Length: 195
Image (cartoon, rainbow, N blue to C red; front, side):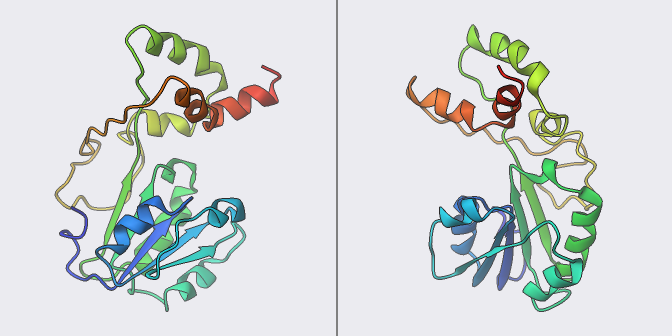
């Protein structure tokens, strides 16, 4: 779907790549993917692919150093961010993306999943119990980025403040659900508060 939007398929940048899940999928359509993350721990678990280059980009990295990863301005055909743009300094990130994207034709795509739904009985209880431990930034994700102050022009998959909604269902065992929930930032915040 994203590959159809960008006329060139030389270079993609997967930002906050984590384990590289999105980068691997993007590499099926692009000659090269540079996948970056601030976390060495995440990058150590990244899925390997000959077309994907994983790089650590610490928060202290300058804009110019980031641009140099791609050879300068106007080199990147696609920028992807899966489920993490809400944590970014959006002004700084947008400024960098505007410089690295190929003009014309470069595309940025961000996506997230909304509130995880388990059952009509469980979901309201979970929502109520987790509110005190949520980071404000996570609300952007829970709203499926509808309220995210995004500075880029829509390219046909969505309209401003109306992102394209895709349903992605995943069957999970009861035992697997707590593991998924423990990965959330709210759980870490609750632990910090002794809960």
